[in-house]
Length: 140
Image 1 (cartoon, helix red, strand yellow):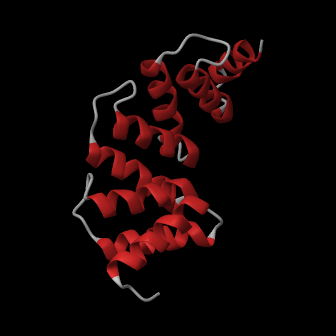
Image 2 (image 1 turned 135 degrees about the vertical axis):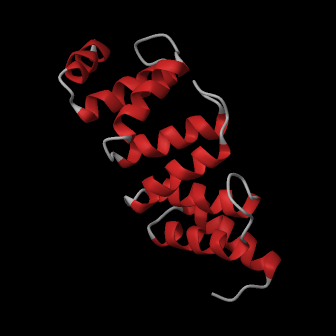
């Protein structure tokens, strides 16, 4: 079973395996759903500067999976992941700025983040960018 292999490798401090253990717990792949353990593993790899772990740690804080909702901490982890090149995190930063979630609302920064994410191929960011530029009469 892949989950057992991930557990064994994670005990040897293998970052990618630790991420996948968190993923398995988050989505119930080959194990029971356990958001608390998912968060624990995501946070472990996030603190090792692994961008996808930072993204999922932010997601957990954003939606309260395995930890209390903390919008400011969600923003913090999204920003770290975005700074490490994660385009989904950049999209999430845009959403945080657009909605004022965990940070002061700032449409210009939201547009900037969506644009950065869209430039790297994120279609959702492209749609949000189009939506914001239409409703806010912004020229890029």
